[in-house]
Amino acid sequence: MSTIFECTDLTKKFGSKVAVSAINLKLERGQIVGLLGPNGSGKSTIIKLANELLTPTSGTILIGGKKPGIETKKIVSYLPEKTYLNDWMRVHQIIELFSDFYADFKPEKAYDMLKSLNINANDRLKTMSKGTKEKVQLILVMSREAELYLLDEPIGGVDPAARDYILQTILRNYNENATVIISTHLISDIENILDYVVFINQGQVVMTSSVDDIRDAKGKSVDVLFREVFKC
Amino acid sequence: MLSKLLKYELKATGRVFLPLFLALLIFAGITRVMSAFSPERWNTPANIIMAIYIIIMVGMFIMTFIMMIQRFNKNLLSDEGYLMLTLPAKPWNHIVSKLLVSMLWMVVSGIVALISILIIALEKGDLTKFIVGLGSFYHQAFEQLGASIYLLSFEIIIGILVSLASVILIVYASIAMGHLFNQHKMLASFGAFIVLSTLSKFLFTLISLTPWISNLSNINISSANDFIGVQAVIQLVIAYGIIFTGLLCAAYFAITNFILSKRMNLE
Image (tube, rainbow over all chains, first blue to last red; front, top):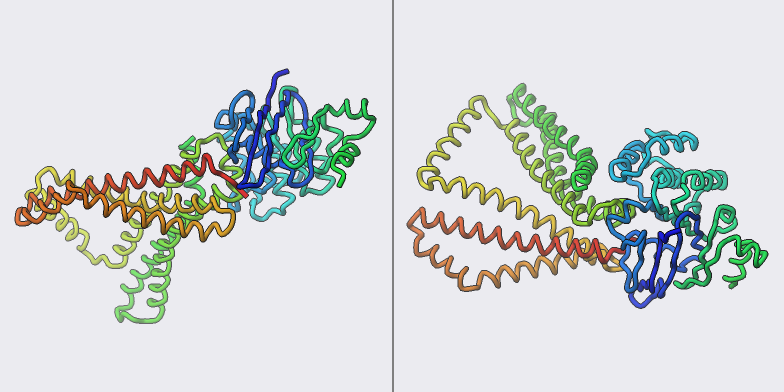
């Protein structure tokens, strides 16, 4: 196994506020990783740093051995927590945009998923509900055959039925060499699909472990362990 | 990557501008037809049509300005930035694509406005007169200036384009600087604009005071009765203006590019 995601002394400060504090983290290819922590623990900041939307204050972050830049953006498929869809395109137009810019984007996959979620490709993005927009974004992100998927709160805003579909979609669309990093605090919903977990609190890695180890060694579910670690 | 970004920028803006251009030309046409049918000039329907025409014209120019700000601020620095800035493209590609498309719409708006005025005002035979006039002006100018008329017109066109670019880039730099603030980004952008333009004017004055440039104005006075001499000075002054404005453009561009690549912080 080779490393896909590596942070070395990664620090990000906003003014005097430290969002990420000297994190060292190494994640191998071919697994689904849960980036778990309470609100404001630095999950989104790490993911944004990986996407060059933020620049580290110090330390490095490497994706497939490279610093975030054009080459890493080609292999990273990123789902932000925000809705980034513009208000003038139709669904099929944004699919064309993705096909244009990303060599690994598979439009037929996207159209398949739209069909099973009953979203019309001719609908305007503007007229969609927030939940539908999130579904469209997830479809766009998962229709790429990327090496690394960075999903920031992918299930936060959608109903439980769609949640199941989304998780299945993630499972179905990632191949064994790809890595999926999912940041969330809704652990019980995604616990079943995770291979590995990273607990984060106040900008620091509190614990990393494979899910099997948690279950076998400690005899606990990830959800229970999370509630213990982050007990208020 | 730049060509793809240009394509989407044109799509995103063209859907607003093309209908506006069409509307302007249609209302210019209607105004023309109505004035041809009703000789008394100030009847109500004709006035209404004329008023709509003027509103569209004003709206078109305001729109080029709004679009310039909107496409930069909304597409790159608000939520849409999550999509745009994670595309495999360098930040300077984004700036250049938006700059070129903004310039294009400004120039085309000017041309369309001119055409619409011609549609309304042109009398039969005017066009031939205009072309004849232009031809004789060209001959006169060519006699006086010789082949350097091409250089002069080239300089003037470049000068206009560089000035246009500097206006757009100072706005981009101001918006990007405003984005560095956590609160009151709009106000901060406005403040940055005032600081940048004051600084640019100050630099301009400073450079104008340097010996070489002051000498230029002396030549101007001493050879004022010599048309060729004046023309050479004008050319020099324009060239100096282009170089100075070009340097300003480069500085504004560098500020914007630095902030987009190193100081991004999307909400």
